[in-house]
Length: 117
Image (cartoon, helix red, strand yellow):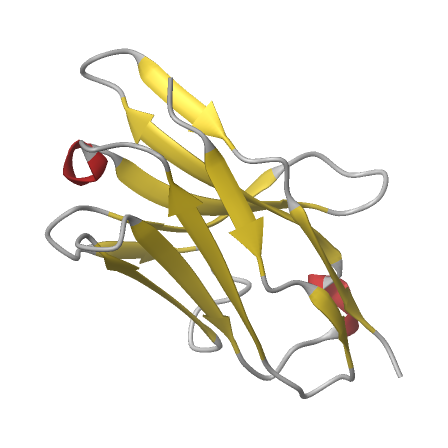
């Protein structure tokens, strides 16, 4: 079982920045594809970005060029740097650790990001 703990959410004005962090309680951090997802009120959870152990990344079209995902395998931590935030980025952001080969996928409890003036 892997526990994921997110932090860094909060209230920010449009155009501002936030950095989310997610720490994983596992000695096998490197075997997981790490991802950030978000769920806005009344909407389904959606992919924001993913990062493989070697550093390859994927982004949703809505955040490409504004958000950056990164990971520190030595610290078992994945980050999401969010710049040029928009009101439509308001959501609960969830961290995910996935290894489809082993059939394992874990979720954090989420951290709320509110973009509002």
